[in-house]
Length: 217
Ligand code: HEC
Image 1: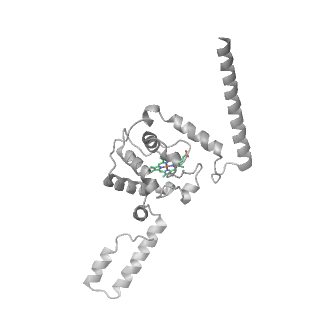
Image 2: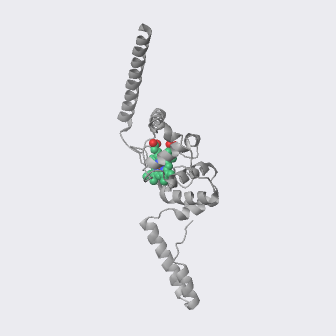
């Protein structure tokens, strides 16, 4: 009895010491670096954040199996979805190397690496569906079991093997800024203009065809 009690006292004491130490380390870090989003989190900060995040996923949710069977069609759909909705922060290859991704704190992790690939399908799904509080990671899921997020899990599993051809295709599906759209419009007008110089029926066919977006490399 006495032993059990003193064990509790020791454990509580240790926990308190760890909490105080952690706060002190964060505090010291803050005083040195301020609150800029440009910083890299320390290894300790990363580990604690990841542990807290993993603990926050309900046990049942992290064990859910992916209801979607992988196929080329599913992969193509998820790839297009990722290029459109996720690549702004995560990059088409999942490296997180984009201007927006690098300006966030915490930054998106390189999802090709083991830390992400080790997460269960259920955990990845839960993260996409619900987002991650206090970070740039938005919640994407609506309603109950959203199949789109399960398909994205399949694409995330594929990231370590994504091919150069897939990346080219994804680039053409990335959202474009107003400036880029404007630039493309000018390019189209310029090309249409040079067609007009020798205008006949054939050329106006070509002009119409060229109103499709031009993919820049
Ligand atoms: C506005 C930026 C932004 C967008 C858009 C975004 N994410 Fe994230 N995402 C983040 C950040 C930042 C993190 C890291 C958060 C952290 O470290 O706690 C993250 C983390 C994740 C993780 C967890 C990875 C890990 O190793 O813990 C997954 C999975 C993920 N994102 C998938 C997606 C998918 C799929 C999409 C598109 C449907 C998406 N994200 C769109 C910013 C974004």
